[in-house]
Image (cartoon, rainbow, N blue to C red; front, side, top):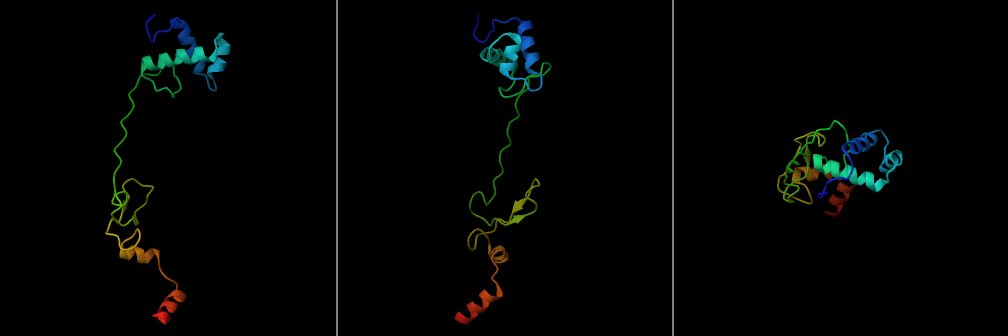
Length: 133
């Protein structure tokens, strides 16, 4: 027997796949149903998945076609992520394409106009500042 091959017949493999495809099925329940242990069921399904290009964590579907995993998109960088710009959010962060201000930093994480909007002082604080002067 070659590496990756199973000593099980095609009919036995199909029965394991069909039983595992049932909602709520586990390796143990399939094994008990077919007179196998869960390690045997796991091994048969693992070899079948690898042979058909199916990800290891995916539930098996009998009529499932092998597919390629999509390439993850390259994450976009912003001035905030690079640590060089104002992080004031312009737009809705839940929507694709929202942006940040990105202007040069004045104090902390914001440019001067956005810092003023974030950190406004109360009239009492302003009166104290004027008194201390």
